Length: 247
Image 1 (cartoon, rainbow, N blue to C red):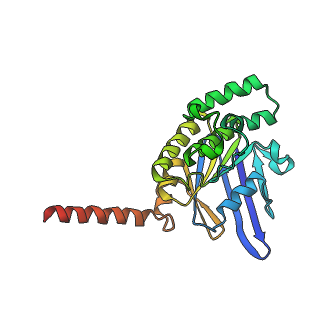
Image 2: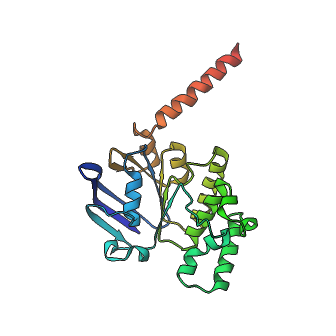
Image 3: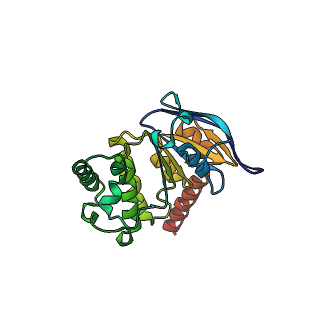
């Protein structure tokens, strides 16, 4: 589905990322783990066409994506901010992309009601964004993206601003929708557990370099994934608990 190679990006003299390369098949999710400022968000924005790389190759379904207009690539970018239109209600926000494609109003309504049912926001359709919770806003944002049936969905820490319980629900919802809608996704996160949960391919972005792993085991074994520290922490907690129970 997607192939990126030899990608480079600078802001003035500051290198954002260098020699980035990866391939991703259809219906798969590449989790990109990285700390703030490592270049992962800029990478997604260049793939989305919101910014241009300084050099590189971008093939989408075997075709040169740079020869296509951005709005014709079928690549949708979704950030942690829902960015809903405040003057449109939920139904109108969900159907906005379909309206831009000039689909019939009756068809738009049918699709909007169906996705709202799937995302458990059917009772919110007449509300405006200001009346929604953070989780509800992201469901609307996610639904709007799904209705455009993107070839590639780019998720830039989409659940980072949510509380832990809502975040877990949204992660589960993503996995369900990824399977049902056969999504091809790049999912950026700074949380190890989220990367392990949502991905079926894994990578680490560090100091502008992207490292893609052959397997989950290789990803977890890498010193920069944080997996060893995580396992050490929980082992220490378990040992402490056993010691306390033995007193």
